[in-house]
Length: 247
Ligand SMILES: C[S@@+](CC[C@H](N)C(=O)[O-])C[C@H]1O[C@@H](n2cnc3c(N)ncnc32)[C@H](O)[C@@H]1O
Image 1 (cartoon, rainbow, N blue to C red):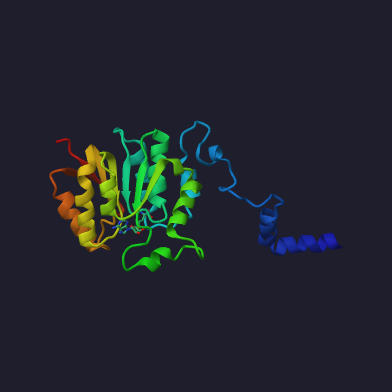
Image 2: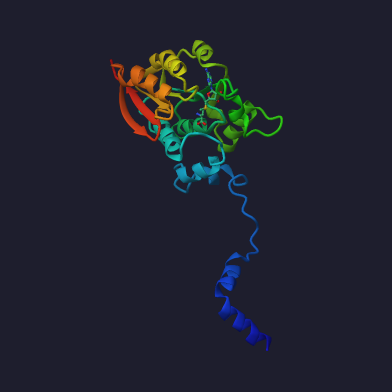
């Protein structure tokens, strides 16, 4: 009798039984990626970096850069034909930093100098600290995120402003990535401060070249697009990549 009743219920509600069959599992909850060993987390069996896994691990780091922009930073850093370090102006919680640093790690080419006041953009400090736990500083979370991505050995943090950091970093670099304050004056100043440090054939990369930030876009247009020192080679979302001409 009960068999007949059960089979009638299956016929009446097939999706209910199918869903139960698919979701009833005695497997332990998935803890990926944090509990997996480093080698499994980021490398496949051919020892190449698995970019998708890396994206998965770093997915939770808050940021304003898109997935495509983050990947492009990694490729530029990993595939560079120049030797040298990278300068990043504006790291926040480290999303762009970890992608640049992973590129240094897999190509065994330099480190990332990560420059940030770790206070947030002037006037927007609350927005930048809204993801932090109680008592946690932006710098604490930045360091945690470097560890999460396994790249802390490839990052030299500079907890200071762009112009003070420029006094400390004197050696030419293979890439400068600028993503700090987006006002016209601030972007113009950052470009003037850092552009001459880029090696010939090195990259000057700028974020927020978009209509959403007219001041930043105007400064980039004047100081990079119209410059005879740089040639713009591509734009992905709001990430503009320029290359220094060999003069
Ligand atoms: C847009 S966020 C950077 C986002 C980051 N690149 C990412 O991928 O998530 C801008 C950062 O620039 C920093 N900043 C703003 N003005 C600065 C300055 N003059 N010197 C250094 N850092 C600055 C802020 O503290 C903030 O963390």
